[in-house]
Image (cartoon, rainbow over all chains, first blue to last red):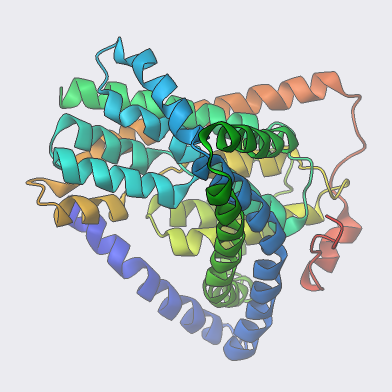
Length: 177
Length: 221
């Protein structure tokens, strides 16, 4: 089953970029021209995101460099430790919605120090795999179309991060604990 | 809310830097963050240009519409206010499948394209529609079948069972996704209750312009 899944994931993109143009060609679509026409949108979209990403990255970077992130992480850790949850994984909950590379670096560090098959390593891996960098997703997707009022999207995104974070810990403690 | 979070991160950061005596680090972090933002955007150019090209072929060939029809019922449940057969549905589905397969590089351009299609249905261009919020909810919950990056990292550090987290990740991701959908539904209802009913959101005149230049945020945005 697992082999099948990894097979699919390595074949998916090559098959798509072969099958789609081939199918289109049989439908008399001028494939190359079509490609170029669609591709033109890509550049403008990437440029349109720049102000949004710069704004968000600066804020996160400032928050981190000032020591504020460390402070809040130290504040959260003992809070959940009472439930027997390894304190080391808790900062991930704060880091994950803010920065994808930051949380991946933290997870890698946990795996390196505690071992990939330790409870901490397993929980960290699961958290990293089952939640997303909400602020980045929000910035990029809304930035690309110029949405300024995201309404309740951020609340829902952060809520699902919290649920995913707790679910990952609970499930791992049941399965591996 | 995003305004408040952004402001809070900067102000709190300033206060902490003042207390910790880290003003120089803070200044460096400002320029570092700005540089990162540009680097990430530029990194997206190659992926966006390529995938949007491929997706245009799929659209011109009628493939997206076909997939949209096939999975119509699922999408009709999740996105009740997107007209059936609208090109947005094809992009939404492509985005979801790319996420499922852990093809992060392909998922972002498709998600952006889906947003742009949803924007053509939006009567109020700078405010998100419920459908946009649902798409974001699905993306932040990040439905994942194969956490490929993590399996690779675990392998690197000598795990005896690198893929051992696939099951737990799938379970956690499923719970998070269900929570996201439920919360999204709840907020959608509450938003409806709070404001008077708006005129029908499907602006058909606008959706025919879809192949024309896409609207990008103004310089003021």
